[in-house]
Length: 377
Image (cartoon, rainbow, N blue to C red; front, side):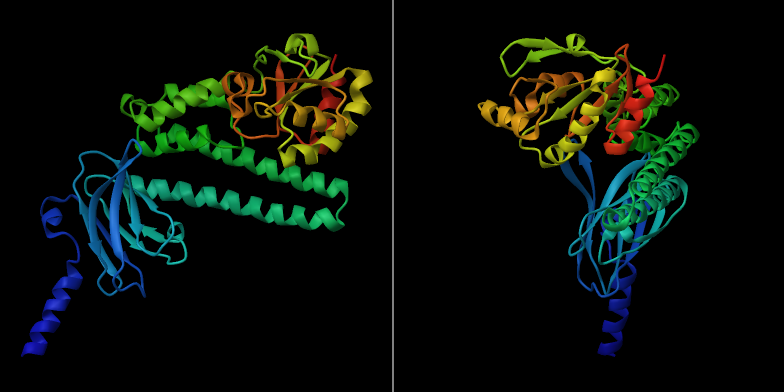
């Protein structure tokens, strides 16, 4: 009889392994499993600013758990399981019933079954992953081509890689348009605002105008909008902001005075290995096209007190074009305030009118764009 009572008790615990007080008033239920994780701690949390707020927590019972919450509007939350890296994002709303089959190797690979906004969110994430997987395969092909492939083959791989960015962005623009009245559309807008493969920021501004008032008021959307607005000012098709800074000789030089028929603004630094690795290719292009109207102005993000390092890098790499630097590292006002540079090397390619026509092109793609602009009438 005692054994039967214990068995029944364990079944009750398994069926309701969540916070009973939360369950009573909840309108959201998350039912999860993770085989082989008998007693792992589980949390459902959100963020208020940068501070975590735990909404519910429990302990797994034989690899199962339930979490509960009450919400009055769609809310982005995160599932955290002790022993599994990272957190799993979920969108909960009144009536949500979400089932999660956790992947022990990485929580972001977990299977999520749901309806409503969370299903839309995961449909988007799945489609996004398909684009990323295609690019990952191309990256491996490019790596292999580095040893055995021709320059034409490598260029083809690079072009196919960036074409997927364009395809992905088109999908995301359409997704936002179809979800301009809900949290998921706002989250995708935020993701695009911080996408390293730059989308069309002016198009994003137009999409923002179509958001409902509630979506516009979301803190993450407000933050993303500010960034999009800043980056739209230096997007392709915009006039490049003018600037002035000291040359190696200590004289002030402006972008306006350094302009050619085509001008490349090259943000770099002596301490930046990828920048230094690109310099031989940039030098070759400059020597080939300078007499035809190509100018380059290098804007260095070298550190305060390290002018000698900057000058040595210019000499060692044979960089005979224009150079300026405020020697303020990442606090450089040109990079930070005007061009919103967050990583280097970063380049802006301008036409004869000072309009930004391309960004961050490397090697063959950079040369092809310069050649195209020089041939324009």
